[in-house]
Length: 171
Image 1 (tube, rainbow, N blue to C red):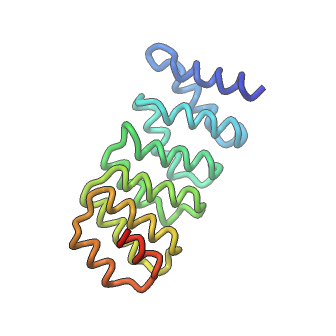
Image 2: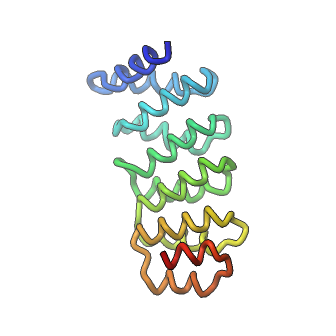
């Protein structure tokens, strides 16, 4: 029963002194199947335990995770317990990630992290004509939300020809 499994994983995540973290890491392994891997990764994503964070960082660098588990790990690295090192890891992982869901998750997570390096990366992504129009627009939206200077946004506008991305800059 899926509901019972989810509840059991949630209980592991709430055990005192982080006693359930390492069993969750074991259960998150892709060999346990995509459903269990995804659900265990989801519980780990809500933890601030350093071992859970280490697992999420290693998960982003793997090639054998399901798209759903990968996107969960990526989103977690951009949320509550994120660091600038997490954002740097996501930026370097971007070229290796092939799933549209995971790529979009990286763009959002990097935008959520904010900071000058992340804004620059997002603006460079917005200028990259090899990217889809939708992703370029998403990069612009996230860069703007992350505090991109107006002058930098204007420079991107002036340097691109894609109408949808230009529209995203004006909106």
